[in-house]
Length: 448
Image (tube, rainbow, N blue to C red):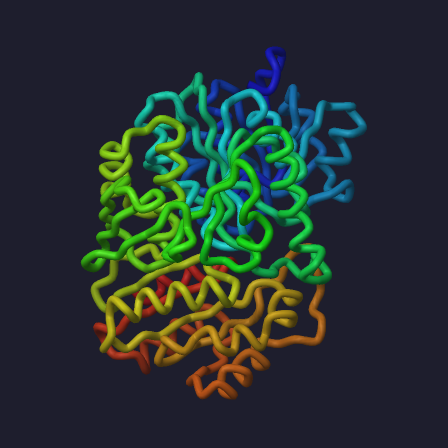
């Protein structure tokens, strides 16, 4: 796919959410794949092992010499200070960053990108799951999605991929169509203000439309609607009467999609929450635009079981444990609201792992308002990014902000501390939600 003379590909930072999924996809496409990363345990390692992709833990120049790859793909988390990247440059190895590699694949196929601040992974997974019914679609998501990746095809015609805005990765992509879920300020370590954050979506969608592409956007989101409403070759979806594809809610998880008033499809989901109804609608509309019949689209969505770390139910004899990747206040509110709606009388304990000092500091007031649907929130120490240092913020500040909003919160510094608190204070049968982009998922094993 990348080049006829490339056979061996080596990924530096292979355990990352996007990188590990790319490794699995590349192997499915016929390449010989290997890589390296830190010794830290990631939930993504399961898909690397299931796909029998070898990787080393720890970085060493010797790894590059031994692997002798035709192409080195680097995670954007690392730079020239990484000894393997430095060695690859000395050896004049062909190199690409993660977004450059994804961009190269997307340009060789009929590609659909899913971007936005929230809902990217689930919407990508839903769309990919539907599109794979055509027998000619490969999918790249930002998480572990075994049911989807096993159905990736070695010689696809279509490519559905998650397009991350962080570090303006969007500049590398030129898909035929785009889903834009929403625009909600994030990644303050890279985007210094809301204007610079909005600019990457504005530039991306402008480029796609100029190239004759199509953009489907969420009518519920003010910034997205302001950016795209009325522009040629764009359509909207949502609950709003102004949406081109309007959602009509039925009983519980049932809903109908209407196109300009005309019936298009009846959908039933096994996942819950209005945010997932929006995700499913975007996926359904785009899939039908690319030739999947309404009945087939509805059938595939009915069988969609969700993906790793997105409101994932973890088996437990003592608690109802739900693990979620949400790390932005909007995502946390949506997750807890959906769980509360399904369990109005349950005791819900949220275990929150703040992710990055910059995000916690920039959005702390919003975090303080995000946990109203939890009876108790345990707050772990902030999970830092490798690209930042501590900067005037602490998890106890989050606890204080929650208290200002009359939410009960307790500071439990580590995962074992939180596990011990739950075992001693949380009654059997309660709902425990582990939430965050760090390694909070490891708590599940300690309490189940």
